[in-house]
Image (cartoon, rainbow, N blue to C red; front, side, top):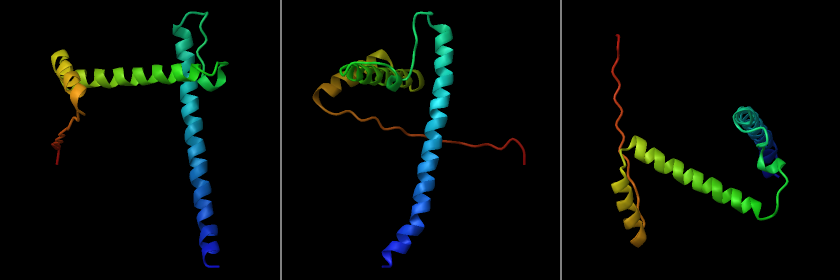
Length: 119
């Protein structure tokens, strides 16, 4: 009997969290639609980019899409490592060779310093 009142009090919080998630999803989709409009301007007139959920597709297409997105994410991460962490082609090859025989982990050390311009 004591469980039900506490559940009842929790439910509005859960409902609020779901509403916030829905708003966040709508905001993301709105930003994505703005980006799609920009892409349409750049691409040839014959192409028509759209959300995957809105495009007619075959069953296997979703796997091709997932593979393409995974490859894009991996390339993006590699570019970040190379650009911002001074990871050269030689070091990248070395990491690739290490990964053939065992798992490779990268450890990052970050130091932040703050100086005040005025007091």
